[in-house]
Length: 382
Image 1: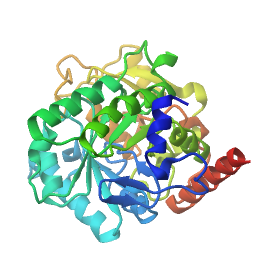
Image 2 (image 1 turned 30 degrees about the horizontal axis):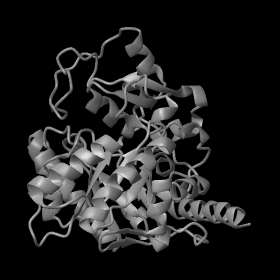
Image 3 (image 1 turned 120 degrees about the vertical axis):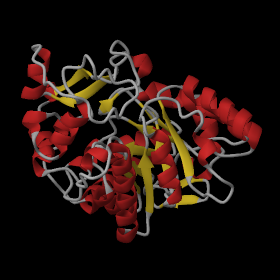
């Protein structure tokens, strides 16, 4: 265990090795989740109010994904930007009606309507904003003193953590409430080059202690605690135990929540996880200029063969998307998949998606994770 992770644990009684007989609570400022699990934000429309509220009801942090929300609108009289705001507002309100637990939103920095999504989320009183796919360097500017929304950047390196901390301190006099640190085994768009994905120096096990070390400097100097949340490839309760030992305060999990009854995606989308084999999990080059992990299917194979899916971009949802030369619209492809139309798209998934073999309830999944965690903890104690 990295020495800085040990110090971090010793300074936080909830993280001292040997006290975990059950899943500990996750504290982000004055916000306390009963279990240290954040459900990953999965677009387009895979994690909406249905899944998010179910996770929140089980004591975790439920997250609504905001990417290309306008695509989900059934109001043809609205433009994409207006539709995105309307759908987000509706989903947050539906989530609030279904749970008294903690609700968050995932807002990609690369969204062309990033500001709209942030402002709408804050105005609806969302508990936490998680933001990655770029560095959210100006995210604090949207807060006012009376707003209690927590701000949690999603990063992939200690360098990114230092950059954000320094910028937020100098410009806004504040630090992030927490960091999600996403490793290369995650699903969807990845913050690594293709060469780094299999390099052990960039594994989540290597990155977490580095970020803990980097952030501990700002914690000591400013008298605050900035929890580190591990993400990417975390599958079992034993995995959760492993990363808490490395100094993380909690984990973010996306793939495990797809094959749940409450997940907002179509049953065919969920079945694609259950039917996937290990070699079906592949890296693709996304139109947005990043590598992404997805489940191989006919749509992806046709693209690789050079077959194009002609389209006229109706959204311009991602700033970095090369919609002029792209062989397909990724927003349309992901929306089709979410709706079960996998011939017209594909499913993003984490490296361990092939291990999913059944659809369960969120309650059952959370109970199994807690059981696995307790077993791993008791074995360590013994």
